[in-house]
Image 1 (cartoon, rainbow over the protein chains, first blue to last red):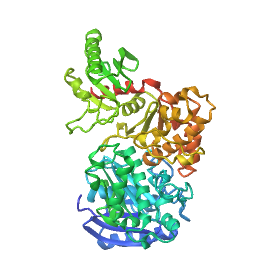
Image 2 (cartoon, one colour; image 1 turned 30 degrees about the vertical axis):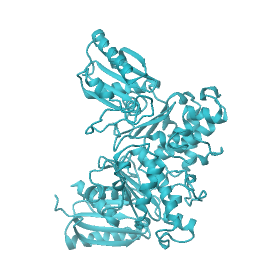
Image 3 (tube, chains in turn blue, orange; image 1 turned 90 degrees about the horizontal axis):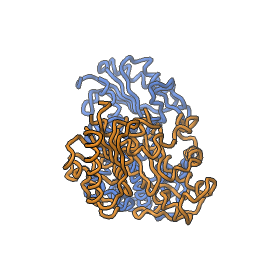
Length: 299
Length: 299
């Protein structure tokens, strides 16, 4: 089982990462495919796995972590579809079905962020953490949640990126958020485009000591406070391009303690806070490796 | 098993409800004991069960739903304690231990609101809902969460009452919340005392059409939006004294749809919204019956 070849797709809004291997230390073949139209992108994805299987051997399961929203209700007619995404051309795309038509192996699909959470739980910084939250901050903000090692679904799946937070609690004037649905929700305030809109340049242009990061830390701490109060997680992993600014971790940890103001007297929020909000152990590979972990669970 | 006698305690800040029976339709004996000091209250609780057992028969398990925060970590030295409560005299009270010293039956302890959620899941309006959230709005605001029918714990337990919401999104001027820890968190804005502080009289004095309820509905909708985005529940039950104002349910449902602004296209948030935010099927008995459900699960 452990040496069975498995396949994985991390389906993102700008690229699809695809891999075949047996685990994180044994990726036999991988590629990145640009996300254009569903037809074109899926044709290239299928070609990769088709050629790949001939090159390195047949794979026995496929895991897919995808941008969403996704329909994850197995009883639904649109199970495995990308549904109401704003991504041009991708509304109601039958992602899972287009792969099932071609490859006759067990398949699992989940959100990219639930997949990343599972990757971190299996091989990264989330081992034995229950609940575990994984948040990515980049072009958008998304979050995955594992309870007892299993992705949380429920009526749909978490959409943590759109949490409401009292932006007014930061010292800055009420920022105008960029979320087309909610204005100043988490994504509207903290995504890369939100930072660029508020501060006039892309996030990566600002030095570690720029004031934008102080405000970012306060707002992120409010979001993490809400997640802490709701899920009582044992760890929160923050990944994505914006979180490459590693100076943010101690700043966010401190702000989280400040806004919760001593109300929750847990190890995680007191002496253990340095281990409570951490970067991904798998770096930017959390998503694709998480999809691989999903495939492995099917064997 | 189904006809075994079981015992239940709902330990609240003003009273302890105690019962012996076999289930919700067969309560053989019950009482309310005033919450004074731990010593005095627990002595009366123990006397009730002691006499009760002689009167109606020995009980085979005991379930306890209690105000918190509680230590629910079974490996902890203070497992089953009420910990950092602001309730005078009750800090670090060994609730579970004081009962274990006297009654030698299996016991389970959880928060009052996790217990109430379990009561609703077992016998009330939360049947087959996964996840299920139960929120009580009274002197304080608290919430319980069941995932797959099991109370969520994690590092501690949910403390939904202290969620941060952007109060500024209501039309009212930024209200000054009354939470000693967080000012304008959910409890600081929506509890009975918060309403009284803001509007100058106890909540029950205001008629159904008073403007206080419009603001309440917007703020509650923001809290429920955050819970929806985080947990993706299939139902949210709102209980407690303030929610006896039944005109609030359609108002909150409508505001929830308004603040989420069509982002989540689920049945629960569209045509099913009337069944998404509902009152408890067990009314004010959810807590004590939930404690009974906890006991029943031990058999």
